[in-house]
Amino acid sequence: MPYLHILVAVDLTEECDPVMHRAQKLATSTQAKLSVVHIVEPMAMAFGGDVPMDLSMLQQQQFEQAREKLDSFAGKYPELGTDQRHLAYGQPRQEIHRLAEEQGCDLIIVGSHGRHGLALLLGSTANDVLHGAPCDVLAVRLKKPE
Ligand code: AMP
Image 1: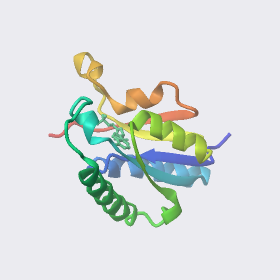
Image 2: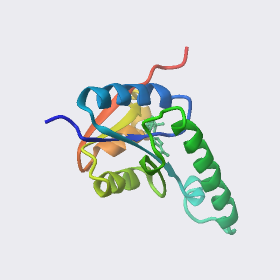
Image 3: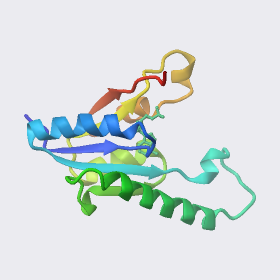
Image 4: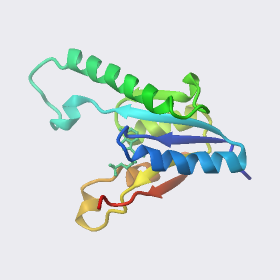
């Protein structure tokens, strides 16, 4: 069965383009619809939970900046209409899975740094997304910087 709807998870760094190029090729060959998602992580998460101050204003700004970055990234790809650009707030794994289910996606594409050993234990979104995914997951290997 060819894939019908591919969801590309983007962290909005310069590494998104190789991931997106692979997704574009795959989508063209199977005539699949393409969507992108970026997850804005709660600031408190970065500080390990309890933060004794109100971060709501900063978080609002962070969300708006992410929206601008996502629109500017997606603007380079004419097949990504405005209803195919998703911005969510929360934990990447949980939100990517939720969105894939909600949008009826049958493939999630993420970038992978091919971490192993201790680096892998410290966390990789690709590895995280794979576990419990509601559909297939493709990890596009990202080259290490020279
Ligand atoms: P990393 O955890 O840095 O190894 O991220 C690897 C890949 O996970 C990225 O190339 C994206 O595909 C995906 N990813 C990481 N962070 C996010 C995020 N905040 N929103 C959406 N996708 C993400």
